[in-house]
Length: 412
Image 1 (cartoon, rainbow, N blue to C red):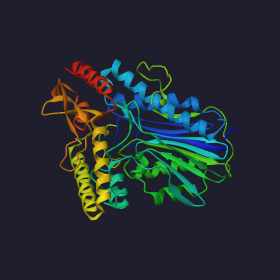
Image 2 (cartoon, rainbow, N blue to C red; image 1 turned 90 degrees about the vertical axis):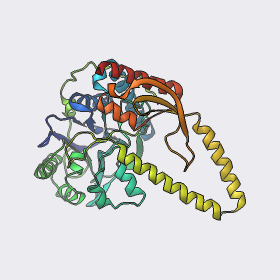
Image 3 (cartoon, one colour; image 1 turned 90 degrees about the horizontal axis):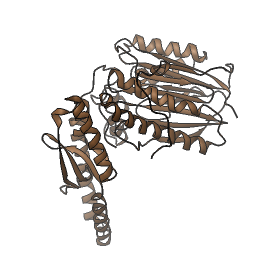
């Protein structure tokens, strides 16, 4: 069954950026926003590549389960192609993109999400944020350490914890299925909108009963009036309701609306994190920054959790202590089957174990010094290594090192 409704896609460079690294898509059944990052060329390529892979999903599906599985697999294929492209063109190292996608299947919306672009639903005049931002400050909000309002102005508000990038062949993508109904209005947007226009004003604009196109223009105007320091991309989808069905060719906006300037590998069967690089918030339009401060905060947070757990163990019964001790031993043995790539004082190193410590107990040790000098890497790749890159096996860690070695050679 083909989705019946009306939609629009709109993208604007904003008032500060020199180019538009966002991409958007509005078709018959598929709607996507992708916010690229990683330099003038990298962000363009990453978001365009995501749209290129996903646009084949603009078709009816037999079931929501099929749509959800295909959506997840296609996003994973995109990650594999980003890795392949950087292997051939090291100058694109560090590129990545958020992806927020929605596929309509009968009376259901199938959603996939990674990064800090957002999906909202306006129903009966009530606006709800459907997706959760994969950012450091969202983790602080979820743990109760800061409020939602404090998160809007936190100095690390756009440190991404998950993104579709060139260092992770198995990205962790949120997918879920929601029932939808006539009169629903869906909004997909990059943080160029949500970082400038708050939810109250967004809800007011969406609730005025205007067509999707006029509503998108109104939201864009609010973002521009607020300074629009980042690219702004908006996709609005109406389910039934008063607006007429829109048919014809899909609307593609932003970077994906122009041909890619690099040779893009063809899509192929998919495969299946590192802490992803910092990206400045929409209302703070500057470049990437070092990740050391927020990593230290994360480590301290884990240490506080460990201290609370130890107090609980002391209060608990002896049998519980024994069970936990056995579990801890098994967990430690598992950590020693894992690997990650990080840095010592001046070189890239493969570590055995995991990045976290269990209180005073280290869970990792140096496995191999690769000899790759940090000074030979581009600044973005160096920051990524210093933040550590997870690997599922030693072979995967060595593949990451090989890519870094090629990047270092190209950067000399």
